[in-house]
Image (cartoon, rainbow, N blue to C red; front, side, top):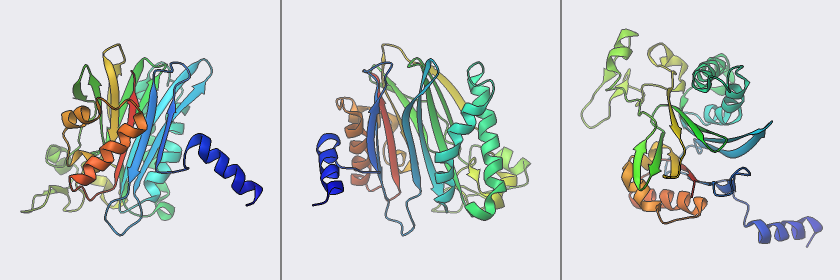
Length: 282
């Protein structure tokens, strides 16, 4: 056995097996706050199209928890690009600390413009997104486009923090842009007969009829807050918000909770890619 193999074995013994589809971490500001994530590839023949961000980051005297789910459609390049660039663009906004919600909105727009300009390299298709920024363990800023979703659980009660941007609910806006919403029997409503969400990053061929304007919501973390969950629609198609909260209420390890949710979704016959981030506050 080589020295490198011995080192890897020692590292595995201390840290556990290296797995890019699963991980965990914790806040330095408050050791009671931990996060974990887990991803499972669906049954489709294309490459995995879900990407995750889950980390705590120190900036000067502040700590930021950065959490996100990016769920690609007809693309893994665009969610991968978002994984690398969206939070950087948000944090570069000059009024991030003073007007965080507005900074997030502008950064979403800037990022979408960048993606469209790089369409030759990034290809067709697009991605939904849900992002959560935890500022100094106290303020949570959630934004989303599409149907990746975030919930918060306070005293056992689940509350949705994002909005599922469905074509049927945004039909008027889509038609005002010159598009249409199909509603064929046995299928979900789709923008121009193609896309099952009304807002997304990318999708250059549909962009005239799509929005990348995020829904943004702020929540304050207090003693009632137990956890938040971010996940792609592979989870939400088969579990309600309250079912998700009830399913992990007694699982204290955040990574184990995220893994449990993905396994439960598979047991309920979800065939989509499934990605999940859990942040526990107690």
